[in-house]
Image (cartoon, rainbow, N blue to C red; front, side, top):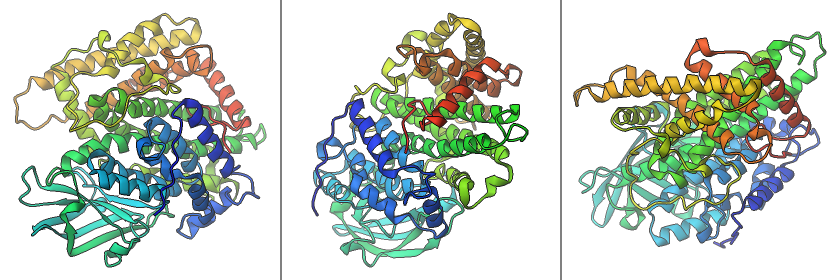
Length: 578
């Protein structure tokens, strides 16, 4: 296989150039003459396949190079940059983003984490040559049965015999390489081991047992199948890491996959908001769906605000892998726990504006219905909502025993979207539990700046921040009570409700941090968006704190319409699209 060497400058300018090139090649999603337009993606979705022209485009672009570390010939060195590039794909089709991109990335990070030199080299050559990968992650006990992994690898001489089933695996049939996690009874360090083996679409995988395709409501272009093994021989050289070290390896991979997958999904929500804005602008002033009605304006601004909140969480989550590795697992769990709910609720609220058109399967608004079906599927996968909440609860039990101080706040680059100077994201060995909580500490520091903000919106920002700091005080007191309970007792149900509050407080801290650390006088440095975001979060924490900010809504609606007219994304980056 020929290796396509595609080293790239890691500067912000280089990242923006790659995104601009990909957006340009995709073209305008709403152009009926575009062979990569909405109608073509909808038609492919109806046929249950990925759009071939889009796959060829990504082949030419060399998208797989985004998943390969720079020292192995690829372009991967910043997780936030990876997510931003993939948003251009998810903006058109979530199935394409998952089936062509995210699935291979999720498999490859396991190899980069603990693979041998040969395994890393071979995997890099496969991806840079246009190959595909798939991964059967272990599903935690709190996970879902649809994605259950019941594979066992029993020692057999110099290798292993693999048996069992993986019920659902994305893009299994088209994968030239598989990363599998299987129970290995008798392993010295545990029972779970990871293997890198030939996939069904390789010469060595022709006899693998593919199960019938599982049809899904969303991401219908993805081919979801299971795998079944009955004594399939695996050479010992196929092990990734040590026997029995699979659980630790999966834990090291989860921060990389949790943080990026949902960040990429913001591209889907962006398309839903853009489609709804087009719908509202097309209606006359007397229509209930027009921009002249308060209900429509509020729905659009709320969705825009939720996208900004979600991107703040995505930013600190992806950058924590570089800057706060000990806290990256926790922040990845926060993103996985919170963002699917926020994004799906935003799309539901937008559907009320569209009314009957939200059910359209074709035409100008068919993309919205497809997005509404696809988004919930992106939140699935190993380490889903329940297991992410378990990670948060475990942190809350420790949090009662540590002091949260403004002196321990997170580093400034965590909050700067365009800052390219980050340390390496790969770390040797398992990550230790977080000793403190940098995001909560940053909230205390940011609160001082918010209190000094001027103007009507500055006052609203300060008021909402005060609600967050009070909620933090109550949360820490509750954590101290939990920490004082006897060891070995079942976790109090209160802890699960506290996980909701913790995730919202972290989201507020992320938004405040992004606002505080901006230089200049651009949109992100304006307290308007931060006031709207913090007011929305404060209202979710305490219904009595929910308020309407007419001036803030006016500011954000003007920004939303400007970005619509100028064809720019609704995230922190305001990227030119199409």
